[in-house]
Length: 168
Image (cartoon, rainbow, N blue to C red; front, side, top):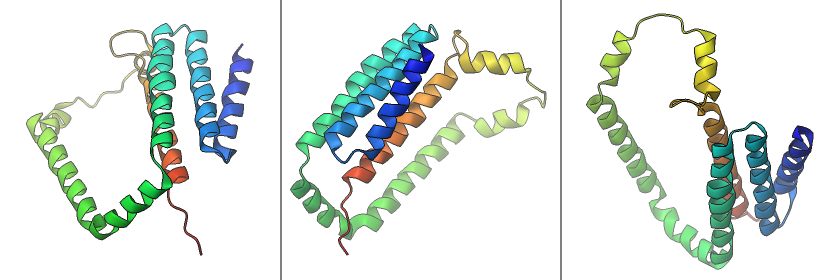
């Protein structure tokens, strides 16, 4: 079963990247996300499998499809032309807001003081493994991180596909 799911995931991911039509890419992305959900079910992570289907395969893929259908090239061109003039100011403002938010969080929660008081001891590998894939309160870290990195890669791919091509 693992081999079948792996072939479906890899084949759909390759087709998602190399297809020329955006709706087919979204469909292949849906197949990849269903395959990842199948992997979770195969590993008896039923909660993660259900979350993968409902949130990512159902919600995110449908959001991509609606965004693709609703945004036309004419709308994007007008938006890009309008944004070009204020691009530097907008980026600087976003960086400033992000830096202030990060500074407030670090100073409010006393992370610097907590980092100084942490004992310099070695953590056993069984605790690290339990934290990555365990089923307790702080478990499932590795699958969620994998899903978040995969989703980020899909967003970056969608941005690259949707961006305006330069004609030289």
